[in-house]
Structures are given as C-alpha cells and as structure tokens.
Length: 110
Image (cartoon, helix red, strand yellow):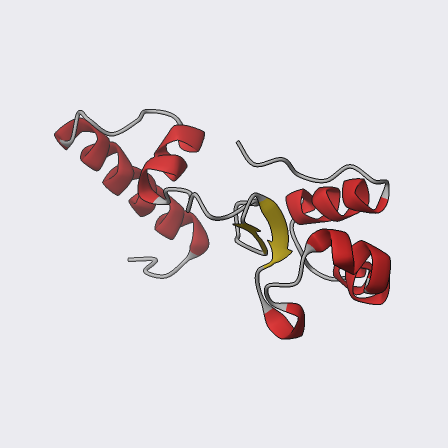
C-alpha cells in the first residue's frame, strides 16, 4: 500500500539503513563518516568530486577541454573558463578553490 509515495519510500529507506547499522557494527553511526566509508576519497583529487587533481604537487583541472592544465596557468590564461565554472553547477568546494586561486592562494598538497 502507498508504494512509491515519497513518505513511504523514505520510511522504508530509514528502516533498511537502521537494520544494516544494527547488523554491521563496523559501520560508522553518523552521516559524514558513513559517507566517507562508502565513498572513500581518491587521494589524487584536490576536491571531493575530482574536478581538480594533484599532479606533481600542483592542482590541475581534472576534466573537460582543459584537462591536466595547471590551475595556476588557468588563472593567468584561462579565467574565462574558471568564471564559467563559478557561474555553473559546481560544488561550493570547487568554487572556493577557484575563488582562492584567483586571489593568488592555491591548494597545497599534503
């Protein structure tokens, strides 16, 4: 009854998640840690989505026509592309990296 109604779907999802958390004690009990557990971060990525990657300790574009170009070079010679990214549907983390780079502060690899 009420199959595929939003509220019923949410309740079913909660029930399944709670059962899985009970069954598998090794799973983290909060959302950020659970997210990290099921979606481990790629160490070559600067941001969570890999739009910027590390290359020899420098941030590079990780997708599209400017793939593998240094972020520093894009600030000097590709600001139109970076401004397009700022105006588009990219994460706040990506936009923050761009904004800081355009102010002369670039990500540092650890």
